[in-house]
Structure formats: structure tokens, C-alpha cells
Image 1 (cartoon, one colour):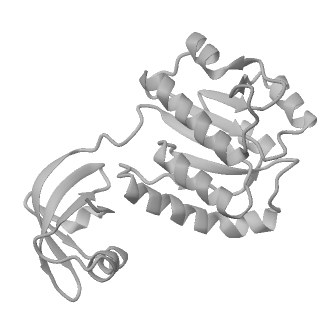
Image 2 (image 1 turned 120 degrees about the vertical axis):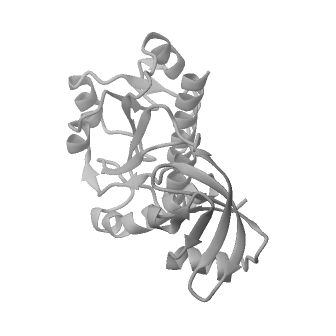
Length: 244
């Protein structure tokens, strides 16, 4: 069922929604060529989902009858954030899409010593990355659209206020994720930052920074993973361990 974000002003009453957002209108009426009688799944700013049926499409709005409404469950019980060194081309788009599917609240593009993307190039991509997260949110029925933050450096990111920060590295690791979370389980409502490096890995200088800040350095196993694969595996394992 197609899933779209709507504004509070588009909810007329407990039985009627009028979609007036131009982008949503074009997508539903023009791209999908929806017709009266077809179903739409909508979600508002308060993370309430609406199961609706289209009753009328005019030149400016789409009128829908609300059949059912309920709080969305498409969200994690803790605040998961990703700090990640941008990758080239489609690999970074994959990171944005998969991290959205896996429930992150936001992604911090972070410049590292071995970053494959120059600062100016990364700055020019933030808007595109945000759009990918928005589209992925619709596809996987996210309750809330995650944020792609501005490009920053690793030192600044590590000084942000989080309840916990963990680093995934392919070398110089101390323990597995299962071992770490077994001793330090994630708490409901916790704000957690996951740090993942570029294809070339973190530099020795960066590993020293992690150790100075006493950050746990976590292994994803003996296999060497591509950076975009590492993001998917790391976030997926965190969600699995929490829900398991």
C-alpha cells in the first residue's frame, strides 16, 4: 500500500483527509495514476497512521476517507544515529537508504583521514542524500523521516552529546558487538551514536583519538567488509540484539 507523509492541516476530521501537498499530489495523481476507490496509507506529524480510501481527485487535491487510524509502530525504542565517512556514488546512496530502513534518527557525514569524497563534493550531496532518506522512509513506512546532517569532521562529531558512542573498525578491535552489548545492553530511550569509517578504514591517528576518549572499538567478525556493507551489518546487528 503506498505510504505518504501528510501535514496536520490536511486532516479535516476523524473521517476525512484532503491531500493538498503539491509533491504528494503529483506522485499520487500523476505518477501512480491513482483513482477513486484505491487505498492509501498516510502518516501525520504526530506519527499517527491512517488507512484511507480515495473518494475524489480534483485538479488541486485528493480527498480520502479514513477507514482506520493508530499510532505507528515503525520506529525503534531508542535513538540510533550514524556517523559515517561518505563513499563514492551509488555506495553512499545505499548507505542512506539502508540506514533509513534500519531505523536511524539521523546520519552525520563525517570527513576522515581516508575519506573517499572531498569536502566540497560531500557538501554538494547533502540535499540529495536527504531526499534518498525521505523516499526510503515512504517505501519502508517509517514513522518519522530521519535527518541527514551537515558535513563535519570526526573530532567535532565525537564531542556531540550522546548517551553512548561506539566505533566499528576492521582492525585493532577489542570485542564483538554481541560481547559488548551482552555487558552493556541498550536502554529504552537511549541516544546512541555508531561511528563507521571509509573503505580504507580509520587512520592510526583516529584510532588513537578513539582510545583517548575511551570509546569501545567493535568488531564485525573476521571478514573484511566494504564500508556500505559494514553499515548495513552493524546497524542490523544492533537492532537485532536490542529486539532479541
